[in-house]
Length: 236
Length: 283
Image (tube, rainbow over all chains, first blue to last red; front, side, top):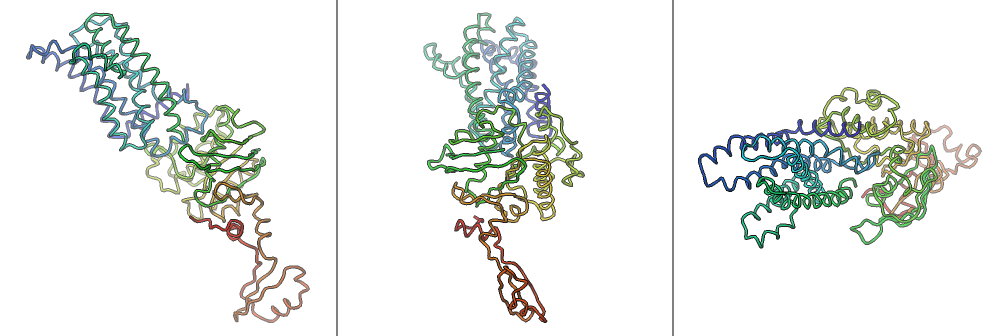
């Protein structure tokens, strides 16, 4: 527990001492402003927007996860660039402890942001338990994304490019809402597709559990696989 | 104690092995050095021993237990001083040390302040590492490696990037650790460092060990048992060391003349290395 807290605290110190990372902490504030002030304004001023509100909400929820996706990726890449990562290879810390330490707080923080986001929006009735479930699954994007980038990238500059690409990969399934029904499932290759569909079902008042179940399984499998590739690339 | 038998390691991206059947032992309380040019496999051998590189063949035993059977508790027993500084630049020296100290269950044997004092970094303790010079970062590497009082220490080029005064101090600290019973494995291409601190050295070239012995014995074996006398008026002559006190020719040569320089003709470790391997240590 002491190890976990020490590493988590150190991550926050690193974030607050790096102006570029610190500025990213403002992203959720922007998203909250959009949901609290922007969406009601849009719906009032432009009636045509209303049918797309659920889709917009889904995108906002996924974008909410992007703050820690980016920040954590950059902190780990900085570690790799300065070769501090090698030191973690020779301390009595298991890969499980390492990943838990680095991602537990960003995960919980992202989960809370998503819960708060669904609570402050005024368009949909989302039961608290379903809100918690959805937010918990969406927050899994954070470790998957950061471990994914750090498994394939060697430095921060490369990481910036990959972050753009990963951001697109996360949002590609958004297009499934605009294609004919028979093509929709082609997006199932992307784990966030199932999350998007589950969120949409939830906001529509339908059962989201099948989609959310697939999303959870998909993200957890990716998390396990990427933990292994990350271990190989990060510590040696 | 470390025992290595027929150690072979091939990097996944290479076809040819980097380590080609190494055999050596490091006794408890001994400073053992790997000497070799860049790319000879020195650091690779250390990385296998501190479990960063897996998938080797051969047998490696540490304290009587196969390396592959050691769990994470192995890392409590070892300390590693990396070749290049690797610290969190935005954190202070103290924060860096405290962070890594927190991973060890055993309390530190000495305070972080005294560790900083030991390597003359007291004034920099609360400064961010990004403001440190390379030499200061290397000293921070050194105290991070020893802070949890490990039994076995690996130092990769421990004096690299240090000025002569600090290099001397680090070498002295390594000798103090040896006195305290630590087992120390050093890799270096600095002959002077190896000669100063190592009980035994092994020459490694192209992944193979070509000689292993104490620096004294190697120098003796490959040197000349003679003394070279140079007079002020530039006369130079060599005399065998055996029974030199009764060597009339020697006594006559130096008698009543002004001697400029007198030296034994031991080989330097570098000369021995070149003789044994046919290669230079630089490059």
